Image 1 (tube, rainbow, N blue to C red):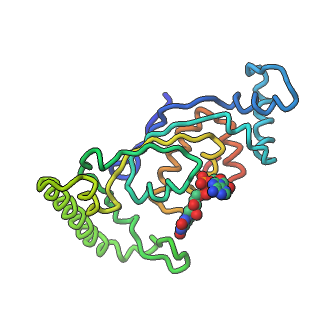
Image 2 (cartoon, protein in one colour; image 1 turned 60 degrees about the horizontal axis):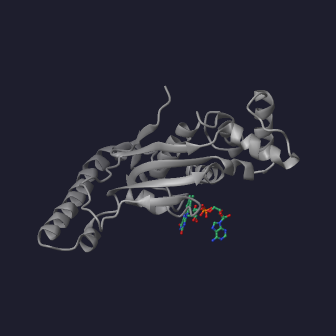
Image 3 (cartoon, protein in one colour; image 1 turned 180 degrees about the horizontal axis):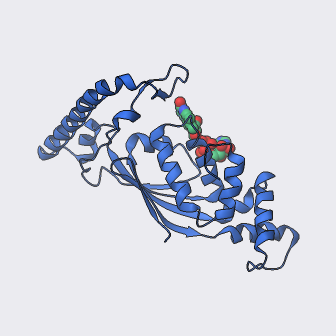
Length: 234
Ligand SMILES: Cc1cc2nc3c(=O)[nH]c(=O)nc-3n(C[C@H](O)[C@H](O)[C@H](O)COP(=O)(O)OP(=O)(O)OC[C@H]3O[C@@H](n4cnc5c(N)ncnc54)[C@H](O)[C@@H]3O)c2cc1C
């Protein structure tokens, strides 16, 4: 059975809502270069070879013939990173229109770690001796988020506009969006966001997206994985 949704983090998920095209769409787009006859998929081995050749030689425009729309629920700080990718088209829940649900991301204790000493942006999760301490601190983190939601609801009850009351909420609060992109831009996103330098909380979304598109464009994904230089099973 093909899955269309992967649960991510504590309240998040990625769903593949729509897609247009397949490996064959890439082949058809490429073969117009030499005005080849319409292909219905009668030469699977030849098509696979062509897709691998195209990707390996940076002949990327045929990969734009395939399009995906994902529904995503993720913490706001993940969306801050995600929305830097300008080649995706977004529609997001508006906290001006409606009150936000009390759902905020709580990291799992072993995934917290410490500030990395060799990567200014990253974290290190190598030290097991801090786990007990982190387990206590995550309680403080949760308390602070709950307090923020308590104030948010109180301000709303006192008549504050939603568009201002939301400003007291933490960036761990979950939001919800649809994002549409072509396969080439999706591969670019995955290359940056599956990479070990990307934050864990966005990497898990990128890995889920890869899992969802693999059945739709298996040969293209395989060609990308082989060239991506990332630690992903081929
Ligand atoms: C590990 C990591 C750390 C990061 N740290 C920071 C940080 O500290 N601060 C920060 O601000 N950002 C940071 N970023 C975001 C990063 O700088 C990019 O904004 C983000 O990864 C989107 O990449 P992109 O521009 O290639 O993607 P897209 O916006 O999807 O663009 C795809 C490609 O289209 C082309 N393109 C799109 N728009 C333009 C344009 N206007 N002009 C020219 N070419 C264009 C470029 O070739 C680009 O590579 C980080 C990203 C990563 C992965």
